[in-house]
Length: 310
Image 1 (cartoon, rainbow, N blue to C red):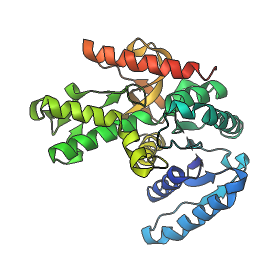
Image 2 (image 1 turned 60 degrees about the vertical axis):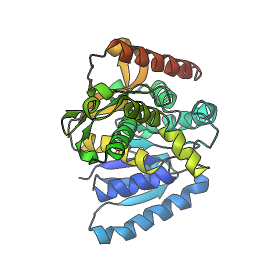
Image 3 (image 1 turned 30 degrees about the vertical axis):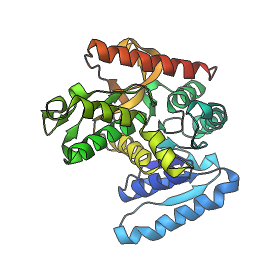
């Protein structure tokens, strides 16, 4: 029997999620949208079904505006919400998207209470916390996509700067999904060679700054809207590791309960994603500078979370 993937939000990220999930044959797919956009969700589903013969991919793809149709989903990926516009901070999005997440949480709790839930909606650190509090799901069942995206951006920028294959760049980014995130140059390697040995301090500082502002850079280029290709693939990587029990170690926004000295917040940390969901958080031994940067991002996340009043 095929797995079932529910995509709550059928916008730019949602439709790419549907395409990637279908191409990878991760399972049957339901694209959920609000009633006034139901026909768009159905149209996108049909369009993707008509694409399938070219890739010989088998997945039933449907569109709906009824939460009943996500019943029994193995994975729910939530992108529903307003996108960030030029000049807006993630915090500006908080009030409007909190209202949306509240409605989504109720629907998912009722119809897909056993699903691994991957949150993409911004401001992510607050939205994944809100979803967790509103559903009451166990912490292994709720993951924020952000760290996977932040690390992909870091790896991409390193590869672009040095003119090397992105496949040979390994590294991770900790912290909140915003300008205070913590890239770790000290632990980044290129084909096993430490980044600090082949890049100058100026290059590394520039790469770290660009990673922290990567989302804003795209928003400014678009003028309206935010990134969609990279967030979609980042969420699919998590879903695939869960559905196939690949046991990948991925940087995700996970609920820390003492790890890194953090309690009760979703922070980007290395996570073992298995068939159990968020199975384990790995703790990295940080130096004093890295610890200070992590504490700074934790403070920002704490402030944003407090604004949810949950």
